[in-house]
Length: 258
Length: 350
Ligand SMILES: Nc1ncnc2c1ncn2[C@@H]1O[C@H](COP(=O)(O)OP(=O)(O)O)[C@@H](O)[C@H]1O
Ligand SMILES: [Mg+2]
Image 1 (cartoon, rainbow over the protein chains, first blue to last red):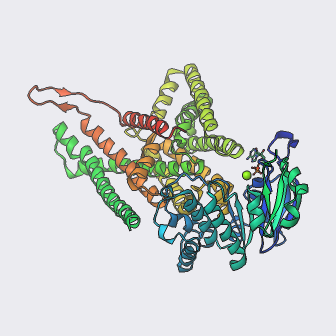
Image 2 (image 1 turned 135 degrees about the vertical axis):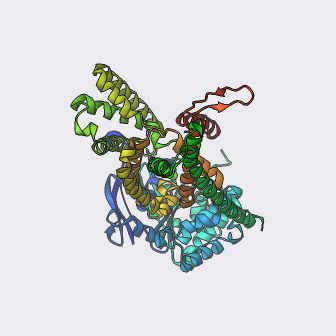
Image 3 (image 1 turned 180 degrees about the horizontal axis):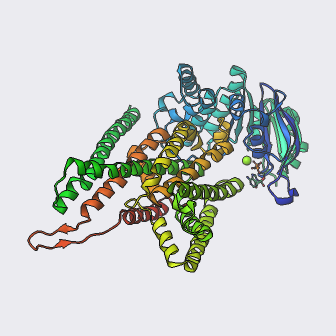
């Protein structure tokens, strides 16, 4: 179980501009939770804090009741896998080597049979087994993204936090990626928090939506409750138009009548 | 599949590179020993008796040990420094270890005189100067890299200003000294590859071996760290602790090698990048070994060449000799400087 308790973060001296302002959240187990909000709302910072990658000024993140800062980094990495928003790496490596990094928390880089097996499983799950010896710079955006998710899968953690995994993906790959994310919950019992830019993806694939604005959580709940004018308009400072389509709600960003 | 052939080719290439480097390493050490013994005897027209050979070897072996250990430590600290700062151009030597070295020696003489054991005894002197260098560099790295994570520009500027202040301060103090003290300081700070501080080798080498081992055993962690701070943390690396650990080792390694063979500002940059080009891998273990080997070859072969050319090159038919006296350090710095320019232009960043 992961509970966020009253975390605040500020990058400004004196702390009068808060990136996170007293945020508390209990992550739903075995659910896809979508984190939505405008640019600069603090989504990445919250996800980073939940993964113990960002050190916050106050508050705590509890992993099974224990403050993550009191747990060894390598132990946290066996429970929580985090993929940051933009994956730019300076080294030239193959898909296989990247995915093997996912085993680092378990084997310290000395891969045993079980680790190799997990790497193979992750590659198969993401359907990139045939790309394993390619270098990352020889891949398309979608393939690259899947390689990074494969690394996260190889890490074999119950919690997976993804920051805008649909970045740079076209529609087909985005849908594929969200289907995989959903499968991870239904098939492998993972708990996933994913930052999404497109509310319709959240509406279609998430079981829980958290809306953030100016470092605060404005509201959270089931998609039916969240994909409404009352919730979305203040979150994004925008006038949405919402329609029903086969029982799922769809958001229109612009109104043709105007 | 084309790609996996690609990878096998890279592995085969790595093996070939290592074999060639090993041969070159043995060859250059042999050549260096030859240049100081038989070649010198031939040039000076004296017979090389076993006794003379033994005596010369007594001075040559420590020089080889000094060069080898300095190359290894410079290569290793440069690569690990580049990994933790996420830069391919910056090396720890670029922030002015030589000026800190000269500054410490000058201050020692000025404060205590040349007859203090801190200055006279090579061992004391070594510990005091390297201690001072470790302290100063740790202070620098620590304050800069801690606060603003990878602010390389700031680090460079700080180093530039610091070495400017220290070397100008040292020059000012030297101007206040007596002639005798001044020449003592000059002699003490003129350590180079050819004029090595052989007295300290016995203390420096064990320290270097420890630092080398402590860096090598972490090679897998450095592999992960090259993914960047955030991704490495989420893969279980305590980045801050690993960074502090590395900076301490870098400071010790740089200080000890500077006190032993002087500063070789661009050697680290050259060998690390040469290793990257040669074996094209991101893994630190082969990169560590390859860059150390390239460093050994560069220093030892360069010293052998300097030794062989020190008598001038005889020009056939004319009957004169062409005098060449280009210190090895100058050549390394010249090549290194050019290479830095090339890298900055190519990568368009620092
Ligand atoms: N490391 C940092 N240093 C300074 N400011 C930061 C840092 N990280 C985030 N911020 C600021 O905090 C705010 C929220 O950022 P972020 O969490 O990335 O928002 P989001 O992911 O919702 O777009 C932004 O205004 C950003 O400029
Ligand atoms: Mg973000």
